Each structure stands twice: as C-alpha cells, then as structure tokens.
Length: 286
Image (cartoon, rainbow, N blue to C red; front, side):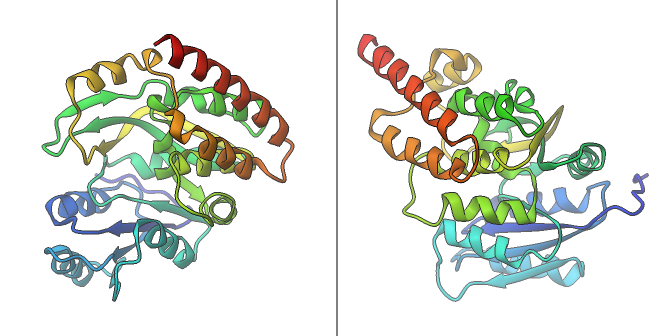
C-alpha cells in the first residue's frame, strides 16, 4: 500500500537519454513505483537511433504524468540536461539518468527532508553503484557526511571531500529549481571540463543547505566497466584522493566560478590551493 503525502509539492523529473533502450524501462518503472505521487516526468530523447523513442512514447501514452520529446538533432549531453532544467515549471526539479534506478522511497525521502529542513536546496539519499547487469560494484559511504546547513563548514566539507568518494552523484538529487538554474549559469555556461558536475553541486552548497539521507534509496549505474584496481580504490577511496594533474586548473577554476559572488570564494581558493599542494606532493612521491 502506497503512502499518501498531503499538500506536498510536485517534482519535475527530467530524463535525458541517448540510445538508452537497454535500461530505459527499468528507470521509468522506478519512477512509477514511487510512494510519492506528486511528480511529472519529461523524457528528452537526444535523437537516439535505437528503440529509445518507441519505449518512451509507449510509456507517455499509458500515463498522463509522462511526456516525451525527441530532439530533431543531437544537442550534446550538457545541452540536453539544460533543456530539461529550462522546462521545469515547479519549485522542485531532478535529473534522472535513463539507466539509474530509484527505490520506491527515494522521492519521499528527499521531499521529507525539504519539508523538515529550512533553506535546503538539494536533497539526496545514500547510493549503491551497479554495473550494466545490476551487480553492485561499489558503495559511497561518505555521502551522508556532506549533509549540512548553509555555511562555511558545509562548503569546505564538500570542497575537501575526495572526488572518488562519489560526491558528483549529488547532481542527481532533488533540487530547488531556482537555485539549480543559478548553479547552471555559474558552472555550465562554458566549455565542458572535468569535474563540472561537482562544481555544479558546490554552487548549490554555496547558496543553500544540503541533505543526504543515510538510507540507500538510489542505484547509480556505471556506464563503463569497473576494473579490479578501480574497484579496490572505490571501496578504499582514501587511497586515491588525487585530482588528475591535467584537469586540476580547469577544475579549480570551475570551483571558483561556482563560489563567485558568495562569501565562500576566498575560502574555496585557499582550500583548492592546499589541495593542489597535496596533489603535487603525493603525485610526485607516487
């Protein structure tokens, strides 16, 4: 029996997809099984050449909460994400990758956090990462530790957290739409760079609180194989805290763009400078 949530706001779900037919049904079924009913889903097919359009169209015919659009040309991944964000007409927005899986209490857990926590801009849950065959390949135990109210501790905790811990996954949390649009302008209105998704989350953390529930309600699918060495590092992520040297400058610039206009710009500059020093020392010694 589904839980009933009274007077709860609607969530606009944006699903960007390109050639995602293999897992698309499972992703949409995960939405349909949510115990939080106040949502609409827009699927944006980035001009796929597999069965994505047929599958999405069939679901749209069966449930009036689901809409489907096929782009006349491939926009590129980032612009497809942007298209969906710009279509959002509710106070709450979330991206759902076409191969990820929401457990039935994912949306309700996220939305309860908004209901119980003032000035929240992002709400997420614990996750497990799975491979193409739905086998678990890693855990991300550090993510709930990123929870915090708007303030220097929350921002610095996110800046210093190691990238391999999975902090980029917070981009798939429920977002306050207005804050998400500001974060997009701060971080994605430029050439794509490594770590852009993490800079987006940082831009939100500089403008609102973050909540990551400890319950695992989300399964993130890896599109690439997880090799034995990487599998070891993901379970022991403290052994691999380094940002690739070739990407550090653009990533650092992205973090500063994310914090620009806030009181967290200078602390972020200092924090990233410290990380650069440790990155360099450990890179040389390794």
